[in-house]
Structures are given as C-alpha cells and as structure tokens.
Image (cartoon, rainbow over all chains, first blue to last red; front, side):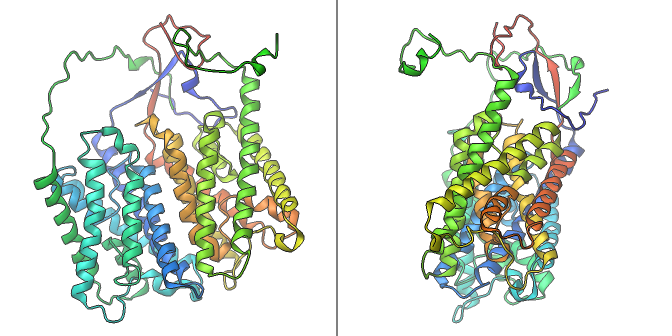
Length: 279
Length: 274
C-alpha cells in the first residue's frame, strides 16, 4: 500500500535527494481515459472563456478595429498556447473538434477516443460560456463573443475563409506535434507554434468572418446567448479545413519511417516494491 | 584567500576541468530562494506598474493600450522567470505559491515565507517606480480598480477564474511535468503566454491583476485601497482551485523509490554517481 503524501510543512524535493528517484507507474486505461476526458473538458472550458472574453474585452470600449483584431488574436493565441503546454502531458490536448478530426485522420487518435474527446469539448464549451456569462456584467457581454459575418460577406466567402484559416492551424498541429519524427523534441515548443497559428488566424478573420477556427468556441457562447446566425459556417468550415490539412500532411508531406525494436535495449533493474510513498 | 574568486575570471573553456555542483546547506538554499522571490517580484512589479503608466502616457487608442500592457507584462514575467527559475521555482505570485502549497509539492512554512518576501519585493518595486517618475506621470501607480459596471462579486469571480487558469498552467508546466522534465526549460514562455491572455482579457474590467503582490505594492504607495480585498481573495481562491484540479484529477501518481545502485556520493548535489 503506497501512502499518499499529505500537505507538508517543509518542502521536500526528491530531485535534490540523491538516494531517491521518481518512477512513473503505468496508468490503467480507465484512469487514462478519465484524465483525458477531464483535461479536454477543463482546457476547452478555459479556451472558450478566453475566446469569448477576448471579444468582449476588445469591444468593451470604443477603439480601432485593427487594434481590436490584434487584441482578440493575441489573447486567444496565447491562451491556447498556455493551455496546450499545461495539459499536453495528460491528453493529446485537442481542445477543438477540427483538430481532433485532423488527429483522427492522421492516425494519432482512435475513433472512440476522438468521440469522447469531442463530447468533453462540447461540455467544456458550455461550462466555459456559462462562467463567462456569470462573470461579465450586462453591458460587457456582447453576445459572449459569438462571431458575426461582416457586412457584405456572404456565407460562401466566410466558409472559405474559416476553412483556410483552420487548415493553417491544423497543419501547424500536425507538423509540430504529430509528424515530427525528424526531431521529437519539437514537442516541447510546439504549443507556441500552435498558439501563433491561432493568433494569425483570429487576427485575419476577426473583422471578416469572426475568426472562430473552432466549432465549440462558437457553440458554447451560442447556446448561452441564443445567437445562432450563420452557425453552420463555423462547423463546416473548420471540419473541411481539418480534412484538407490531414490529407495534405498524410498523403503528400509525411515522411516514411519504420518502427523497430531498439537494439541492445536492457530494461532497468527497478523494484517498485521498495516505494515508500507517492509523490 | 576567501574572496579571491570574486576577482578571478570564470571560464568553462578548459577541457581538463569539470564543473561539480557542491551540496548546499539548507539554510543557504532557502535564503537564495527567498532572495530570488524578493528580487523577481521587485522587478516584475516595477515593469508591471511601468507598463500601465507608459500606456497612459498620452492620448491613444484604448485597445492599443491594452495590447501594450499585456504584452509587456507577459514577456516581463517570462524573462524574469527564465533568469532565476533555477533558484526557487520563481513563482513571483502569492496565488501561485498557494496553488503549489495546495498540491503538496511545497511546504506551508516555505509558502508563508515566500509570500512575505513577494509582498516586500512588491513594495520596493512600487517604490522604485514612484521614485522614477515625476508626480504628474505617476498618477495612481497603476493600482488595480474595478471598471464601471463591474461589481464586487463579478470582479471577484473574474479574478478567481482567470487566476485559476494562470496557476493551472504554472502547475502543468513547472510542477507536474514528470512526463517530460525538460519542458521546464520552456516553462517561462508558457507562463508568459498565460499572463498575456489573462491580463489582456481582464485589463479593461478589473485592471488585470492575477497577482495579489502586484496589486499590493502600488496600492500602498498610491493609497488606493478601494475594494483591494478582491485582488487577494480572488487570486488565492483561484490558486486553490487550480491546485485541487491538478492534485485530485489530473496528476500522475509517481512512486518515490530507492535508487537501484547504492554506492552514490552524497557530496554531489542532486546527482548520483558511481
């Protein structure tokens, strides 16, 4: 029986104790599935909170429309980068049904996994929009940041813009964290690249199509605020963009590689029964 | 001679020499950690106050001001955390300290000492900013206040939710990173991104504090105490929430075991050698 460590009065850091080492136990499938579900839920909650909130902040005062696009894209891109960094070790951290679809088509996520990831994302977006609704006073809610089409934009043009911008985002996800066999350590900095891709996408689309790039980012605020105009554009555009990105990478750009047994590998002589505590 | 090393140039270009980190006494390590928190918070509060005063220097677009403020603050946190993260984990934020204590990875007494030194650093930083500017520029030293229409409850919840996001990111990249410990090399950039997002969102509503020390320093020197408690209770509740999320739901249970070989040298700091 491994004793769980309670709160401490004095900090203890095992990395500074030369007689101890950290051993990662294999995680059982149900626990891993629950952690993945919860991290997708919580990550999407925070993401929708910041995506909707960035639009409310950008329109809270009278200001320049270019500066609004800059602020909106900056907040959303940086929030996504930080969130991916935080929970990428727990789940694949999709936070976006379009990215989940791209991962599914690229073979990184299984079908059942992707289904409950999307379910967690839908629950998370509703919770995030609800929290945002509760936190902001009436004068600042601004439909909780539901994206709108600019005057003169028709749905075909908006669809094409959302599709292209989401393709860039999904290409960034696939190129930096899925198909990165040329340098696996790119995973550590990949969240920043993905955040930059969202930043440029939202900055460009902010004043034209609303720059959603994420179906649940629109679904949550729409459910809470009741604004549903042109809602299908923000589902079909990102989904087609994800399919396009997955096709480009998997069929045209992917590098061929083989998976072999590591030569000379010897399992370390570790005895978990000597464990004195969880950490 | 005891102080000869202060006048001797240091170089690691000598191939016959090897750097060996000696074991440090617990008291000296703790002192260095507290000083790192003090100086880090000092410089952060200076830059944070300066960013808002610089943005309000003249008539300009309010949205551009928010962009300037959040970018400067986020990158200031990233740069300063990078510079001293090897010493104390470099939290610079009582809410983050409370989050770490909640997870059990930091002791309660250590946390209390860290918070005290963070507040003292915030005081000195705000004082430095006050001394750096003539009176008509210093205004209220960018003390955080609620915007028109934002009442106490909404301000509290905005600060709480957004600070829980910041502490959630800090714990994810700097504390619960057993899956890839080297990600802590890039953790300051993640924390800077989280600060940019949080401050950018909240700046027009609550002033974008996310940090009780950041609000405490300017409040003391500008005597702006209106609803100041929101900027303590909100972030601390957010830190506790994020700590509980990680501790209960998301943390990976790792075991602490004896090293398989036993002829290590205790004199080596944090490294076992055969």
